[in-house]
Image (spheres, rainbow, N blue to C red):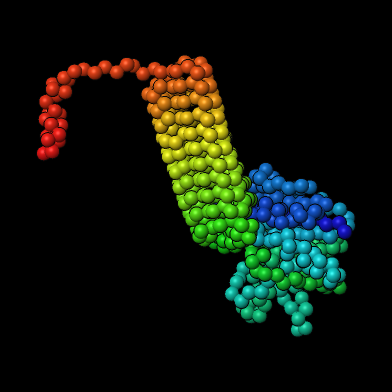
Amino acid sequence: MELSVVILAAGLGKRMKSLKPKVLHEALGKPMLQHVMDAVMPLKPVRTVIVAGSGADAVMKEVTGSGLSFVIQKRLLGTGDALSTAKKELSRKGTILVLNGDCPLITTKTLRTFLLRHRRGGNCLSYLSFVNDSLSGYGRTIRDGKGRVAGIIEDKHASVAEKAKFREFNGGVYVMEHEALGFLNRIKRNPSSGEYYLTDLIAILLKAGKKVDTYICPEEDILGVNSREDLCRVSKVLQERVISGLLKKGVTFTDPSRSLVHSRVTIGKDTVIYPNTYIEGKSSIGSGCVIYPGSRIIDSIIGDDVKVKDNSLIEKSIVKKGASIGPMAHLRPESVIGSGAKVGNFVEIKKSTLGRGVKASHLSYLGDAVIGDDVNIGAGTITCNYDGRKKHKTVIGTGAFVGSDTQFVAPVTVGKGAYVGAGSTITKDVPDFALGVSRSEQKNIAGWGRTNKLKVKSVMLKVKGK
Ligand code: UD1
Ligand code: CA
């Protein structure tokens, strides 16, 4: 059986009060529309058509998936019109799964059962619904005296009596046989809103003697997002799902309610995540790691057995096996930290590669640097990588030892096994195994303190313990 998918995503989403198209708002680090795409893709549809309109360029740029194409709904004339726009992209046979782009909680599992029920029921059209006694804002299933589906009435057009009587809501996910598309042109413009409602198709099909049914599923799977409040609600559900999935895979959260983990994140077993941590974007964390409080990891790859100590920020970087980051360290984009390396207190690394076992334990800035294995970077080392116009590279060879408070005025290269004396400003290359030292020699001026009477007096008093 050939399955095509259409996702309706042209609306601006006025209730979001945003300049950005609604479907691009992120729920747990991923655009809502991408959540829907990701739920649909495992069903292996022959094609997926996204109906874009508001912010179409951004939608086409941000959403990805295999077999994906876009159609543009020029005037936002409602969901019925949106599906009509997609018709030309669909083949002349098969089953079509239609989803609103603002239902990021939908799962592949629910869709699979839904498709199965639809087929077993021999329906022309089925839709997902849920029952709730207090919600409003959704279209409602109208049932006749015998309890059969008779149509859908939108919330804003329902009378008080209808609102009280019908509490089975339309989730905005439909599956229909190709012939149902032939009835789309029978949908009339709603006189009060001026829109063509896809939901009117239900009554039209029933009138034509076609079989329509609903499949009731958990509300948690089809909550739609119309406002920022809805977005918070679905993000919370998604977060619970992500964390519970990770707990099942052997990850420890010492307080799961106080960590934020985006939906694309992967974490290996026996990793411990402390509270107040944010793991974002497409990050992956290996097994046996510990992520201490206050850390934020964005789009980064963390190997096994890594420790990220308190209050560290890691952005678009790679940290290899057994390395230790922080406390209070900042890895800026394109940094690679070698296995067993240590990046300690108040160290900032930018676009630099640190080899295996490198130690940069305190108060350093390393930018645009390539640092070989087993190099020791003394406290307060700084790469002066920027000359006001361009960035320059610092290269430090394997096994070199850099004394504290060194500045490397880039471009500059330090050879392997070389030493750099503490307090040096290195402007010239240091050959392999050489000592580079640039500080001026110390002078001691005898008796100088006696000329500074005030100071001497206070020192003497201290010495005498007064
Ligand atoms: C819709 C349903 C409602 C259902 C609810 C479920 C209709 C008329 N109503 O209402 O019965 O309970 O979803 O969440 O379908 N869109 C377009 N083009 C348009 C208008 C909308 O592509 O011209 C897209 C939107 O981007 C959105 C989806 O269709 O992704 C639904 O539109 P929205 O305005 O959110 O419909 P609801 O009022 O929520
Ligand atoms: Ca909606």
